[in-house]
Image (cartoon, each protein chain N blue to C red):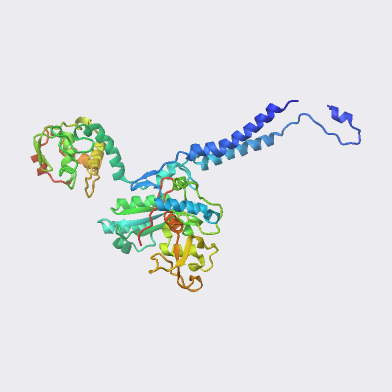
Length: 282
Length: 208
């Protein structure tokens, strides 16, 4: 019996299905991603030249082998803060007492301003937050509902919301990552120390962090004899990290590009698909 | 029913029987229930396969409910549409007006007044006679464009909110509410004559 056509059809169906599921459907879903138009401009913005070059350094050095750029989020909750107590203090204090019996309503109402929002409710469902908003509005006060994303990565301080496709719009190739031998870098630019400290960390991670597992990237630096004057961006190294006498360690352009790229990693803007409230000012 | 294979074998060998067998109804029922559960699971959590919906969120409607309600912002957006329909022909899309047709709204001290009490009257009664706007004297007539239900109170409120916010216009509290509009409407119920600049100036800026 000739099973040729049947085998051919079977193979075709198998390939078409995987092509459909892995390529065509995702292309239809997120292939047409565009920058989001926000009140204060577009997101994301193309990287500046130095940072764009740094992206290639990041790719070339295989940083993606140990660092992910992907913040996970499991759930969300709401906080309510009071920003203006309005004019009718007595009614506002009564409303506050009903909304949150635990707080010192008088002190909260007296201290609340736009610059110093006072927390009324924390970790409440949306319905409770909306209800509190309505009560306070009736009393003439102004309150803000803060949207708080929750998750283990967020708890570790790796981000303020989950990362979404829009965050990677200008990454080519995307460096989402697959293992986390080091911390997640999706928001590194937000928490990064000074350029100098990042450079020191790249030169030898043990300089800034005693138990770091990260390999030293000394080849991104140049050890050269000190000229008439020491170079302005020479690293200040002492002890066992110090270069030979009369020498100094200066970053090569690649190191500076990589630092610019790391500082440009900021997946924290609140988006429609990934809402996050700005942290209230302390 | 005996098939060929079993007859060809010796009796000692175990027979392999081929042919039709019936699926128990309970298996079919279980499969049906499982399929229904799977579909409803995907339906509830799949976000309708929308590229804007990521776990842990369920749908675009849910995401929209997280956006803080901004009355002024939405009034601005609605007002811009109303402006294009009713006002933009004469006052121009950039609010600069046009010589011989309409005075500017951008930077106009009438628009930038503390409250909308005066400007609510203009679309309802019209305006005639000389009027000074940003130091320039104009003498034209504006029709009572909103009179007799030409525009709803909501539309008037939205468009006044809009002109108090766009083109660099900045007012401390730009939002004009339909309640303010109906309050003013009750005051001018008996009147049909167009307003004049002098009469407007005698009124307080804030809606009482």
